[in-house]
Amino acid sequence: MARPRLTAEAADGVRADICAAAARLYERDGYDAVTMRAIAAAMDRSQALPYRYFKNKEHIFVALRAMCFDRLTTTMEAVLARGDPPLVTLHTMAHSFITFAEANPAEYRLMFALRQPPPAEYPELHAARQRALATLQTAYQQAVDQGLISGDALTGSHVVWAAMHGLLTLHLAGQLTIGRRLDELVAPMLDTLFGPRRMAAAKAAGRRPQG
Image 1 (cartoon, one colour):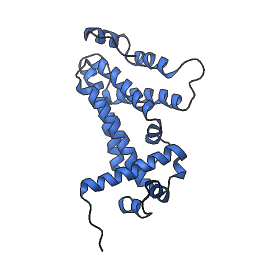
Image 2 (tube, helix red, strand yellow):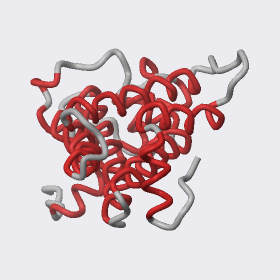
Image 3 (cartoon, helix red, strand yellow):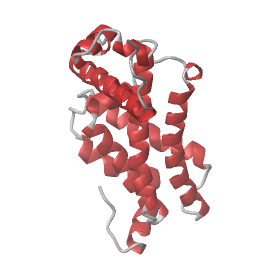
Image 4 (cartoon, helix red, strand yellow):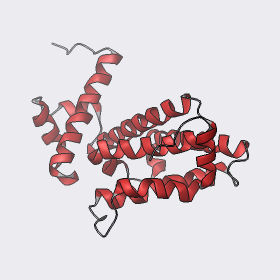
């Protein structure tokens, strides 16, 4: 008897469940331990199930990474939607980025793992990454448009992203052990990037900057 066809919504739910099982295995045992067989076993389903929705393990990790980037983008978009002064927005957005990584360390490591396929091979993942950076770039462009920051927003948003990622990489690798913790370095990093102009913007908005 033919298997009944799932609705698109139900199929998306199964894909999400497969990705979630892969994420749990990755967090517990590492990348190499995650196999199609192990994913099926973790879900208590047939070994054929993952193959009905994904070509192979790499496709599952591509989908999982894209989902993680979309979650990060949603977090940053919520900050942008608040309509705060541009430098306050950038400061708050940077904190939201760091909070996301601290709350989801395994997912964050997966998103930025060194061993990944070329972007051209998986355009959906590349697009998810671009959406995340574009949100930060939009916030940066607002600051440029108001004369609060000089330079172009694409370069500036890359610099902010790189600074946050560098600090987080040290933190998640347990390397911040020689005198300063992550929470002690976030504000100085942002002050270095945005300087006293951020303080002035926060004062004009009638609030104290976070950090």
